[in-house]
Length: 254
Ligand SMILES: O=C(O)CCC(=O)C(=O)O
Image 1: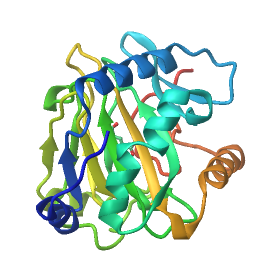
Image 2: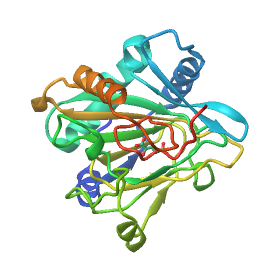
Image 3: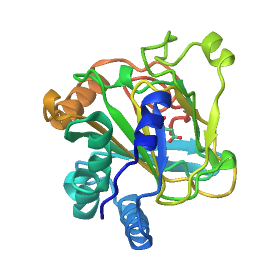
């Protein structure tokens, strides 16, 4: 499958810091959903990383990371398919997968505080993330919300690595509803957040992040560094630690 971006789409991305597109055909959307169903069923015996959160209905999966080595369809979809092709067109050079995660946000799952991704991503100066909707993503099940045209610099952060409240209150947050298979491409400096899912419907999405090829193949280094910091730094908040910043609002499973 191929898709080319129009000048208008490239201009929209450069001006606002994000771009919504629908590059997948029906068969690819079916395969995508089947692939995520499979990963969701994996147990904890492999080198992938499952994370769980406590919900009012008990513990639930909230994230899986590091799954491309173990799932050929997802590896080819994220590393060779239309996604890296589109990101390359936006940044003007080939890109490599830096990291990948599935955020499940199952019914009752928590949201994410306002943040930029860049402070959570060591070794790279710029990167591009994608949200690939697996289920429908709407305001009531915790779709992404973005602030447009504020992707030029790292914003002031609080002690969780999230954007300070004074800035958050002063800016317009725009909800981005998505159908299964839609993709939202956004700069690592684009401010974003999302709410809790109290809708009764799951809201699963894959978030791959890409870096420019000139910065090198950094995926292994990223996961090694993440594990090193998780193992060496004390986590004192009453939250689930799934990121190198503390943007996730989920409750830990005790
Ligand atoms: O899954 C979401 O709702 C938001 C994800 C996000 O911002 C993140 O994982 O950094």
